[in-house]
Image (cartoon, rainbow, N blue to C red; front, side, top):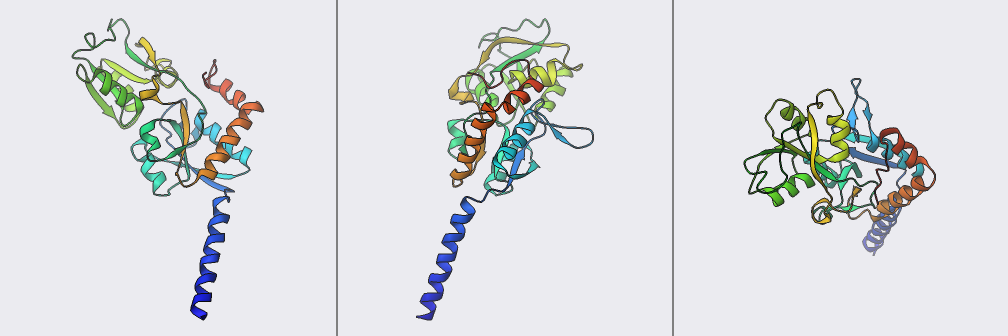
Length: 259
């Protein structure tokens, strides 16, 4: 009898503890990349900066949570979330059906199209025929990687990089004919820099939901739906109280939220 009572006491404590923890988000660890300007980067002094970083901090302030930003390479960013290295990812991650199989997402917090860039005057036609034999650089395991592989994989040589900056370096060195990336990230992080002055956009913008999803959202473990709800409410709040617009205007001359 005593054993049964003791077991019941333990189970009750575990149940109420789980309920308490489910809503206890006064401290949140957020995974960020830090290698995707202007959305996230690291200063010479080692400080994280960028649109994603400021949005993360604004959302935490809105939720009244103490947040810790944890820098993580893109290749391992979802596995590290699932391994509980942090509680959420704010790293310009597109909300796609494939990723939804592994994680839950908040609503979008921005949406921008993808575009190709070429060396100025290269005259490349963006078509299966025009891309035949061309070398295209993309960041590995991204929507851009998936799109160019599916749409033009039979025509092009796809070269995959751990970070977007590595692709830019190979482009400047003449080892790539094209880059495919988020149009805003590439404009601000490459084309508008001294290193990228010899490159330009070419072809249309791409935003097909089949490949590029529903915009960038916050990835969270599926069992933490309460945290998804808190982030959704916080996104709505900073969109309505002017905080989002102030951060937007600091980095962009247009509405990065999209339609």
